[in-house]
Amino acid sequence: MPRRAMLRLIRNELVQTVRRPSFAAFFFLLSMLMLFQMSLQTQGYPLSNPIKSLIPASLVYSNFISALYIAYLASSSVAKEYEEHTMNILLTVPMRRSEVYMGKMAALACIVPMIMAFDSVYILSLSASFGALPDVELALAPYELAVSALFFLSVIALTMLLAVGLRSSSFVLIFMTIFLFLSAFLGLPVLATGRYAYSLSYISVFFMPASVMVSAFRITETYCMIDWALPALQLLFIAAVTAAGTWLFRRSDVWG
Amino acid sequence: MEALVVENLTKRYDRDDVLKDVSFKVDRGAFGLIGPNGAGKTTLIKIICGLLRPTIGRVFVEGNPPGSPGANAAIGYLSERQGYYEQRTPEEYLGFFGDLHGLGRAQTRERTAELLEKVGLSKNAKDPISTFSRGMRQRLGIARAMLHRPRIYLLDEPLSGLDPTGRKDVMRILGGLRQEGSIIFLSSHELKDMDTLCDQVLMLWNGKKIARGNPDSLMAKMRGAREVLAFNLHSHFPALDRLPAEVPGIAKFEPVEGGFQITIPHDPALERRILQWLLDHYVDFSMKKHVIDSLYSQILEESHRAGEADNAP
Image 1 (cartoon, rainbow over the protein chains, first blue to last red):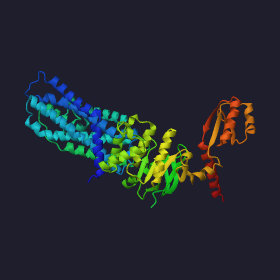
Image 2 (image 1 turned 90 degrees about the horizontal axis):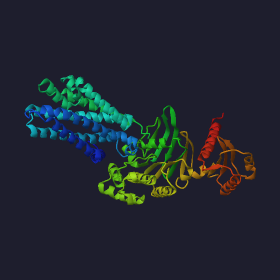
Image 3 (image 1 turned 90 degrees about the vertical axis):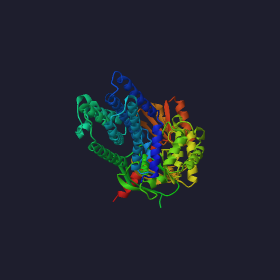
Image 4 (image 1 turned 30 degrees about the vertical axis):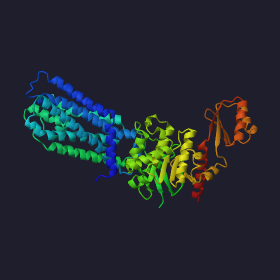
């Protein structure tokens, strides 16, 4: 049962995040990107099957930007507190350190459904504009969204662990940007699970679980089946990294 | 139960002992922690707050281990390098911490208004903190520390960097807290900050406790001198050798790197005579008042001598 103070911290962190000018700018950028992609790719493309062309590119970009923005929020939430010497005050409120860490993480996790909702609205609006989504795609959608959400949670967990260790928002952001790019190009999660089709032409999308599905579908021309190994691995990763982050946060000295 | 118990505290950092076997108890009144920069004052306060973990030793805040919710509820902490959420207003800032301290919304609002009035920031309640001066920030920090009515205040250099008006304001607030029965534990590198407020002073030097007593007894150790004034002369010339004879009362008269230093105890008449002499001889000089290092070194020497005597067979 989470303590009340933790819930208050989550609320405060969430309100502060939503009030950031960058938060509105992020969703505006996401909308513009999707509209731009639509305008580029609708020309000359048969309306009978628009999903194949429209979803991968725009979702990949939006997922990548979302992942970077979430990494930025997570590094701000922790590393900036160290940099700006506000962490030492925050740690003298009557809460356990693990509660402060989990509270910050939970507040960031609340952003994930907002992004997922945004993506869903986008996919549904595509469907409404260009025709209905295939039944199989609709059936897989909740799974794809869940896997995407777990991916974003992985990014949050990893960024927070780095932020506690490095205590520099710039270093954390540089690391996460390189990591996300490398993941994109090396397709680490996909290779790790070894479950999905792999092709050089779609290598840039492999780190995005939702896109993986669509890419695999495009390459093999067969529909992906639900594979529980991927979310299971993601959950394991999130649990391990969160435990490591909490341990480090509880044990570390705050000198500044 | 003692409010604050520190037992054999040692903190090691990069193979250096930042604090060495420090022990003391505080149960009431105002307690000062004094020492030059790097003496270990901030480290000690941070350990009491639970921000740093001791290498050896134990600390209890009202019987609770430092950093625990129980200990944190009992303390109000002002950091030496206090950070603020710059874009928030004092109202939002105090509201945030009131929330985390478990004050209800109405109680937080009421307490915020009361404290902003008390620290003289009620007119700036809706201004972003980024526009605040150092003194205003310090007062806001004190208001934040007071928010949940803690029993113990841990204030790390609350007067540093403040102008005389700011110092006066902060001292007035701290005096009020003391009168209300709160325990104040504050650090400073100047003994003169302590003498009006503190009942007890603990002196640290290189992480070691070298003296403890009331401010007057520590000052008495300066052989009656409350302040020291040093004249740094930027060159030496033959006539200068006559100065000790012509102006009696000089405590130290010694060459230093790049010039010469004259040290005198606090004595306005003597100060005027030396100033006049230096001006008459067209000497290029600078003044440094309250050379507290002299006090530390003096007490340190005495403590070493006492240690040697204790260890003598």
